[in-house]
Length: 365
Image (cartoon, rainbow, N blue to C red; front, top):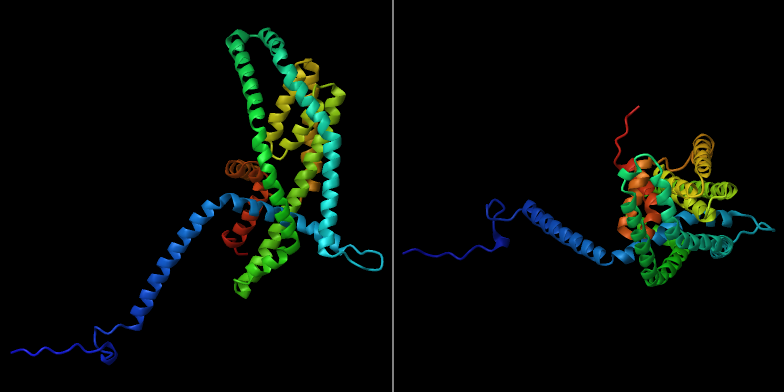
């Protein structure tokens, strides 16, 4: 007859008993549970981020603009008033905003009416001028093989489609006014209280990592600010020079085309080439001499910009390759439209600085 023994409680088992759980087993089980919970948290965070992607994009755009504008606020705060006093941060932000609004209002009041007038005139004249352009092209050699008639018909359809799109998209643009106002308020708050939020975020890191990341982010801030200032200066110079030269040449819609030249200068090489071809086409509607003058101006400007302007204005900027700038603009526009395009290149500069610090394996001297 066999006697059944009661199982020995775990607290009374011998350490040498194989069935006794070891500290390694407990640590392994804890690590597995930790990895599972971490993976689950990552999935939940990604799902939440995708759900709030529009809000996160708005916050990111506001924070990035605040980072770019903060050095200007600091310079205003460092300026000594009579008596050795300095402005507080709130007063410095208010002064910067007042100056920005004054500059924008001046540009809109002085520059927007001519642009709107040229745009309206262009939209009115173009359908009537297509037959004249078509007749002029037909006098060129081999014009009958180019399908001029079909091209003219497609151009008319494209114009009507574009006009219809602009008309139907007005309510959509009006809906973005609230988003713009929200981004503006967030940008102001980031400039006022961004240091506190930055310190709170950095407190999660150890002292060594905190110092390294702080230095890296400071480099990125300087790099982004210098690129924005340098690129804005180059765009302004090209726009003003284009308006003056196109006006002297008697090119139609010279204000609109000059503004377009300045705006498209944000895209390296391709932006200027595409725009000058458009300007040349508009100039060719009047005479070949005007088209030659437009191309001659752009050729001279490009050489002056590469030889004199860029080395002096952009010598300490982001130093991003033109391909990187173009790809960042395409990706930013695809992800978030116009706001994404505005922050695309500064974001590329931030990523470049972070990769240079944490990923690039530098050769040892």
